[in-house]
Image (cartoon, rainbow, N blue to C red; front, side):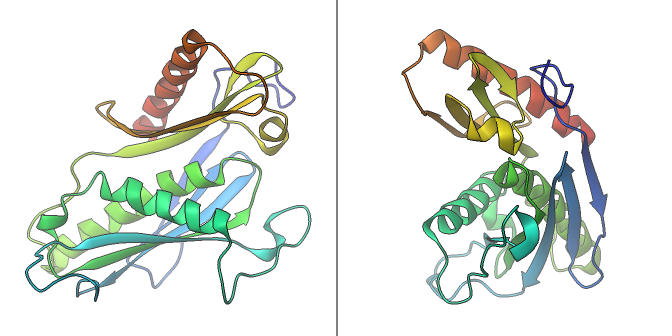
Length: 231
C-alpha cells in the first residue's frame, strides 16, 4: 500500500474537463491526482514557414510551461530562453501527438498544443500528452464542422503514463514523492492498438533485469488502456 492508499498498479484519480477555456478551439483541464494541467489547441490556417511549397502536410506542435506557483517553491517564468527540460518535454508532446495524426489530411494547417502546468505533483509530461490529445481531438471535430477539414486526420487515440520501481516494487502513475525516490523511472506512450510511441526508462541506481522491464511495460500498458477508456 502506498502513502496515498493506492495499490501498486492503481492509477491516481483522473479527470478531464472539456471546454475549460473560452477562446481556444479545444481546451481540456486534465487532472492526475494533484497534478493539474490546462491543455489548449490553437489553429493557424497555414503551414509552418520552414515547410517547402511542395510539402502538402500540415503540422502539430506543442509548447509546455510550468507556471510559477505550480511547485513547492516558485519557479521563474521562461520568458527569453526555455530550459533544456522544457525543450525536451515540449518536443516529446509534439512528437507524440504527430504520431497519431495523418498530417496529409490537414494541409495548410498548424495546430499548436499548449500545456500549462498549474499544479505539479509528478507526471506532468504524461498528463500533458493525454490532455493534449483530447484538446486536439476537440479542435479537429470543430474544424470538420466549420468545413476547414474534410475528414479527421486522427489515426487513433494515444495516452501516456509514468511508472517506476520504488522501494523495490513496480508502481504505476508516480506522484512527486515516489518519483523523487525511484530506483527506476519510466514514461510510456502508446496508441490505443498498443503500438509504442515512446518508451523511456532509466535506472537511477543499480541496473535492473530485463524481466522487470517487461513487467514494468505491461503494467504501464494496462494503465494506458484504462486511461483511453476514460476518453
